[in-house]
Image (cartoon, rainbow, N blue to C red; front, side, top):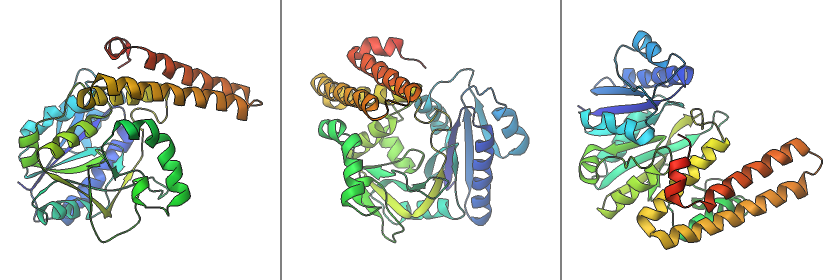
Length: 319
């Protein structure tokens, strides 16, 4: 079998239907390929599972009684995949015709490549961060907050610093691509292993690509393959819950791969960043009291989370 597709879904019924329709359109164009598609539903309450059964009978549906997170949900399907390649695909994506075949071709033409990813686009065509280096202590303290701003000033859109790139005929060697749409060689999964389930919602991609790099596989970013991504449909874009889960994953990654000293150092950097954001909100928008209070509470909540040792934070973090 050529390809196995895994889509994890949680309360994204309409977007999931749109995603599966786009996958189906790709398969019709790719008549010579044998493809299987899994949907792992994380206890959705919006009728996602019945919709899949009714409208997409060619999909193999796995239904969970509770939301087990992204990593564990993918791990439920990966062992049963029969394809030479495995596509991890978010339910809030739309795959243009030909994109799946292009990503498979990238792996077939580069035998030392363990994974390949496309350029992710927002619905309005805006480029999303789609590839880049793995997190480091330096990057986590400075990178996410300042480097993106420097990229906007110093580089044209699509520069390497920004993790975004315009149309390009050449693949780019990188350290990681977005798990929103990642084409992975099955042999790489067999060698590296499944996703680490301690990462419930975020940073499981960083961890897996770190392990992929350690065993010698390469990663390609393919900017000429493009996928639309309605970012944050399941977790809630920029919600406080999503932010806590994001930083929870970062802390777990740093602790696992860089040690407790690095985790504490980066945590101190995060706290300083949140303090600056809280003070800035009060200084720049004093007349927008409701918005200022919301931003202030959000930053204080994140500071409180960062002041909590990871073990206790794990026990109290919302799932």
